[in-house]
Amino acid sequence: MTRFSSYALLPLCTIVAAACSASTAPAQDAASTVAKPFTETVMADFDSPWAMTFLPDGRLLVTEKAGKIQIASADMKTIGTLATIPGVDSAGQGGLMDVVLSPGFTKDRLVYFSFSEQREGGKAVALARGRFDETGAAPSLADISVIFRASPAVEGNGHYSGRIAFSPDGRHLFFTNGERQKFDPAQDLTMTLGKVLRLTPDGKPAPGNPFAGQTGARPEIWSYGHRNLLGIAFDAQGNLWEQEMGPKGGDEINLILPGRNYGYPKVSNGSHYDDRDIPDHAPGDGFEAPKVWWNPSISPGGLMIYSGDMFPAWKGDAFVGGLSSESLLRIDLDGTSAKKGDQWPMGARIREAEQGPDGAIWLIEDGQRGANGRLIKLTPAKA
Image (cartoon, rainbow, N blue to C red; front, side, top):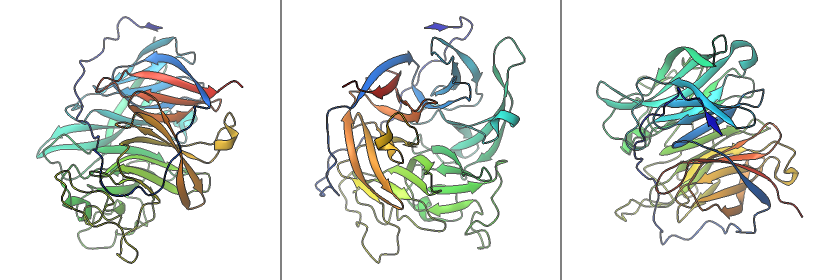
């Protein structure tokens, strides 16, 4: 693997782990741990990678925590820097986060990404975009601009979230804002913290959002009562799925519906880190319960819904990278229902799973707490 010599990497910063310890609450159901039905091939190494997305020609964009978007050739043998994003605050759980192509990328060449920043009042997650430019000697990202900023900025270095997903019709951009370890903002409609937001591709509140006409409420809000939302994706039927880290236990897979309250911190199937109880989700409590939850925690890092042909038995299933659990998890999706599938030990913190152009499954390790920052390709195991 060759890196362009002019692309020096920024110093690494440590991340505050979101691992959770075991809880005495019973598990929702048992996930099977079976022999791996895939072959793992290490394709490249990165410095604390956070997210990735494939270009139409098979090249790969990877965000690194310290602030660089790297671009890898389709064979993964050459890696260079597409952009160094200014203003990235990489302390704690902060850094350069998600990266997603515009639905109209082949025409508009827009690349969307998120990052944590320091600004007046504290820190917050921001949504930005730039134009993929190949007119120079090497690809670059031009015309970078921030199109949305979470509000308010607060002190601390945790629970930024920052995941991005476009609706299947390309008209709406969904963006996750974590509650920043502040608890109550998740229930406060005057703030974007602890919410799933629905925006236009330009970062404006999307017309028709459920709280747009409510006095004082932020018009961007789509759902609320969330903690640290680190995965969001649409399935083939247009359902929006989200996963988030619970407190001590209670990691969740949620079906996201407009206007619904997902309960945090009033309810959770986990407990506070000091072992104070949080009421569990219960029928009739007025909150939207998770479709799948884990106790003890798995520390979910990313969410992908598989649509490829390389693993036909898994088409339509969700895949979650496990951080503290050092695993890859499969969740069976059936319409608006979900249940636990397989959980494979990977021996490292898995930050994200992504589907490749040929239907292979790609993983990145997050490079923290002893893990490498490897890019790993999964293909079917040979009989």
